[in-house]
Length: 465
Image (cartoon, rainbow, N blue to C red):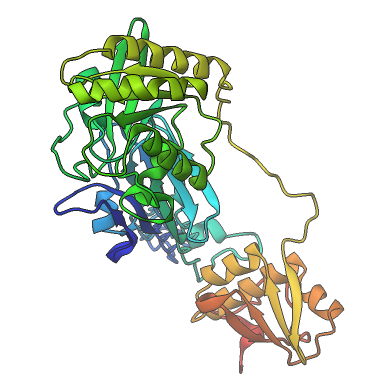
């Protein structure tokens, strides 16, 4: 059930389990470079000594074994990393912004708001850089060259990446216990493992998926109690829609059927068919091996009903176990039967491929930008480099603006505008959104050959503009 902050929390008062949130992440901004000239007694022509700014911090998701829920991000969905510090004179570089490491539970799936997959984080220590920090701006010491020996400007730091993502938790378990409320799933987990879930005799006692570790001989596996499955769960009734996703990672399903229910119109066969209908409607679960558990046979009427319906399930090809969580009857045999199914599933499961960084080098001589005609003598320049360079430029400093013009000319933007049919006075937009800058293009102003002589911070090409 969606609620404020983009999270989805289990129904019921006071529950602290949240398994779906929208996270707003912003990486740190890079620090600005410094424009400084060394001035020291008896040291003539000291030269530029402005340091570069520090890079902004990254936003990183990391699987932490102690994290069990996404509740922290439901309460505080906006997270940002530290900004880089500005450079200073004396060749002092700015400090790098602190990374923000966000712990998430194992089984967290990261997608865009539109549903495109980004990462699937399983296993303690698994990391994913969600948003990268902006690069720090170069100081004038780093910008010095034979043509520009004492730059009177520095580059600004770049903004960090900012994005909204959906974090969705899918519990990592080998076996999923499915069945109607009060069928005895929580009692089975408590009897088979050291887990101690809340147990009571009313519907929807279980509001969160309970996990328990079971040891059967040499085989160890994890049980998950998936709560709230009733007819219509796959369409949002009860709690099933919220928690059906937690079955997806289970290799084996165990139907827990109540043989002692007093509700009219219910029996183990109809319960089984109703739950199977919901699993089929949800999809992706048809190929999972099943076991049928006829529970609560410690009750006299329950044992009679179990013996009555057992042949029906066996005719369908299902292995059937009669159990009682109250007395422990049948639990040892059940644990070894489940362990055998888990062992078989693990044997055919593909080996996880080692994760390697994916490097996608750009083709040689790729221009890195494109010029798009947007109207009569109006053009847009799109590309990573031009957009970055515009962000780095201090437009209050003519020398910095001239340096930008030289960089764009060397990249080939001037020639591309000419080829696209731009005429003198053309309106040229570089960048997108709030970062876009509009220029009036003047091909008669030479570019690409460095700053003209003049006081620091000026450019003779821009005089009288």
